Length: 200
Image (cartoon, rainbow, N blue to C red; front, side, top):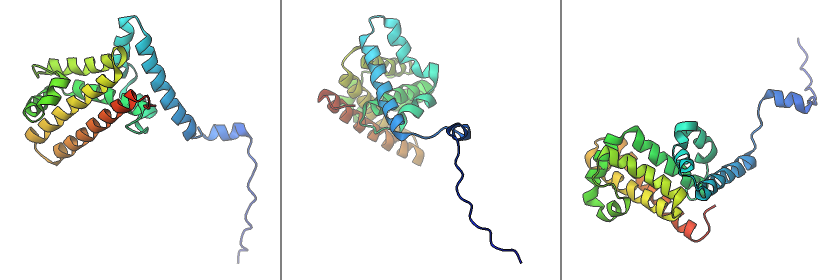
């Protein structure tokens, strides 16, 4: 009959041995990194005199990939600076991924959301126009009034959501339209926070 084994005392490990086991998760550092990178990106874009800098910032996702921005910003609240910037890039990426589908939904949504269409400004509502508007929204974030860019993105999302609910069949379309409506509400709230000096 085997005797029960005595529990072993925990072994002391050298810090270098712990580092070799893998990267440690530091949520506070990640939180700071998200907010600092978003603020630095916006500050750089708004201070740049060179239009090529703005174009590079607009195309940032093309260069680093949406997954990289998601790692930095996606876990932050929607109504924070990194959350709002992330949503602007997601909106642009969604439009570029399926400009024909987005244009069809946008055009269908106009009759339900005329005031939002006036703010968003995709006219006529073709694939080239929705791509242009998505780029203009990000350009406005870096070169114009950031709150206006957020409101324009919200208006665009409202129109597409209304059109998606009208012309695209199936539960995924309904869920997607609802998600876009929440997206738009968050962008509108972020614009109000920016104007109040409270979007961080």
